[in-house]
Length: 173
Image (cartoon, rainbow, N blue to C red):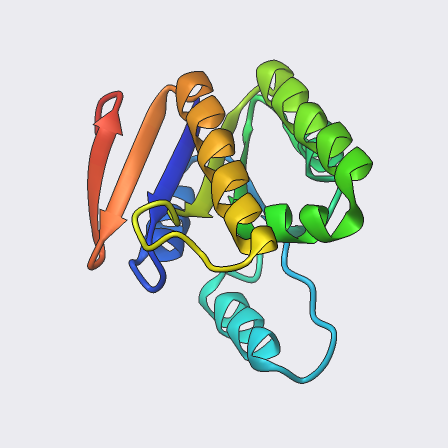
């Protein structure tokens, strides 16, 4: 079962993914995509996520090669929790067009073959105003395209608002 969990900033989407993972019977591997370059706000956010996760969950850091991480760690008895796709997308867009195209294709390929349960958390960014600069517009466009491709692939899609998960595709079970 592959699931996409979408929501806005501070919507509760990561917490929902963590709850679903904690309820699973198998082992859990958390795939983190964030990168820390200094003692910034991102460092604080990462520490908060780490504090919420059970210590027995395995951790894989995949800021760029997410498809490879999924292919390497997916197992029938293991749940993968990917948080977050929009950070991964940002990392890739800053790497250049060739790397972006390659890694996006690799992600979709890896998911199509991945056994077990994969939960993917991502920010829905297409409901706001059109950004002013070209890179921001590209990010919104690519996030929308990625979400559409993943929603088509996934058996279950969640929309989280104010901490309330709504099932958009598949059953809630």
